[in-house]
Length: 240
Length: 240
DNA sequence: TCGCCTTCTGCTCATTGTGAGCATAACTAA
DNA sequence: TTAGTTATGCTCACAATGAGCAGAAGGCGA
Image (cartoon, rainbow over all chains, first blue to last red; front, side, top):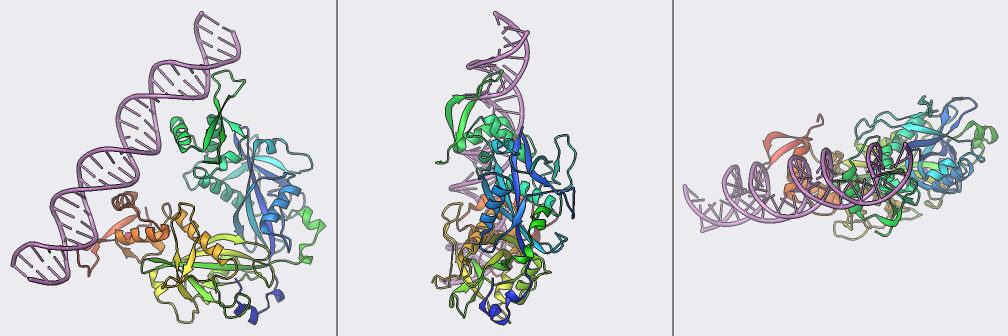
């Protein structure tokens, strides 16, 4: 950052500055599939394409605060687990002007995805996440019928990076729990992991590992309404 | 980012924009200790404190390009492995004006650290990296005599995050090789890992794991000048 | 020259984590 | 009551890890 040497010689206020924005990758699960919230662009440039919700950063506003504001005002979601992802600064990424965008990743519990609408013009799109090795292959957004959605600007890159980050943090952080309701079964937890990884996991190893780790605690209750043996309900135990 | 809806209603060019800068965390090894390059601030604010080298982002300049320019012009280092780290956007982080800074991490081979001076006003400071669990404790910069250096602005946070990132990527990426000369012994490689982690590693397990992974190849040569059995020299094998 | 010292290198052994499969438990629907 | 289905707990083989040991390979001092 600015040494005084620099500031003495040059006045950065005199130079043109890039505009600064935040873009949100809002990820959740809808019927077991990884899902992202998108808006459809109605005007050029890139009219008809799908974009991540975003907004400009105010002059007296923290980056995190800008992300929370966009979450609140554009997605109509009160709060979510927000995490800075990466900053995209290619020169021609927006054809109208130079915009540098700080991408944020937000994880939504299924409830927030189900209760969309209500003032938000966002649409839920499934994310096709082929396994293609740990590095992750091409990620794309698709409709429920499997048709690919064209993403605007560099938003496909942002989405791909978000999924990659999610995969990386999956087994050492508590991201999976942010996508689940308070009480969940081991099968549900494994489904979340498999949806994010895009690959099946060994069932007994997953159970053992998860239980041995001691980060979830049994509630004593069981799921209801199944046509077979009901599974134990667990909750995330933050204390351990 | 900017939906057309937003642009139609508001003209972001009419609003005051934060200044955008890049800051570089230049890390290397000096005599087996993790080391960071810092400049001493000569003028207020924060005169006398130590800062990371940085500079403003030009209006037609990529973030990566700005980081490379600072590396070249301020540190006088031709090239290094640069990687975007995080973007710091607290409102009061610089008292003069609103500056949002994209931090970059760069790894320097020992040669670049030794050949300092020559037009660069940077000083090498050791980084004290207590282990304090995987999460990493407080990281601080110290002189060779162990005196703590006061860092300017939020640069201590940036440095701490850089070390954390380095630790996280250590065992699945090739960051360690970027800090070593082309030919190195297994012991040197282990020293790098231990310096970054701030904790000792099991020797035979480290050897086995490293060799089994197949990412390094023996050169056939051996180190010279030791008072004991010389170790085999290896090189990083990018092809595997 | 000949032991002595130090580190490298390759080996074994016990412990731990993982992949895979099987038997039993627990529930619904017919 | 029985068939069907999934949960749960178990065993077994295999791989990875931590720890230690013996021999190899160099310099050094007597």
